[in-house]
Image (cartoon, rainbow, N blue to C red):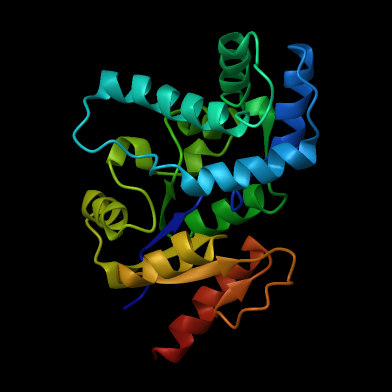
Amino acid sequence: MAIRGIFFDAAGTLIQPVRRVGESYALLAKKYGVEISPAEITERFRICFDEAPPLAFPGASAPRIAVLEREWWKDLVRHIFEPRDRFHGFDDYFTELFDYFAQPGAWTLYPEVAETLPILKNRGLTLDVISNFDSRLIGILEGLGVAHWLDHTFVSSRVGYAKPARQIFAAALEHRSLEASDALHVGDSRENDFHGARKAGLKSVLVERSGEDPSNLAPRITTLRAIPRLLDDWAQREK
């Protein structure tokens, strides 16, 4: 069947931090008297993020979700700094850090996003986001000027399931009245995006901008500009 809707991952696919996460964490920590290298933060972030429970709160009410999101990130950041000496002023540090990454100015679009989304939208496609993120993402996308091209933003914290769980894909499909075979998911994570979407029955495309991924996963693209041609190729094969 022809693709009727496309779901995009957010961070690493549509948007990226203006500064590397490790740099932002380290710069702000220095303000609070904690000297730590961006490289150490980056490594600790990777380890702690992988060990953290899913950023998802099934059954939580909307007001409670906002509290849980903040607590989830605070626990993660506290874990990142555990090997260091006592962090005086940690609560104030975390508040400033959390608020910083809520600002659209802390993020930037990948260069091809602003030109590719209108092309896809003009084809009559439904465009949504499925992301393992929290409620801050909605304001970020609005502030970056792309929310009007996106019909809905499904964040794991609100849906109650995080990728690669099939339930988050199923929730998005149900909300959009789409069959899995009608939809494509585009993202930069092999496990969460590429394999997660496929296990849920969707088509999937891996975004690998460096072109250095040694895997043989296909289809794989280095830029979102390749999506229209990819759709055309699929449509041609189905004729």
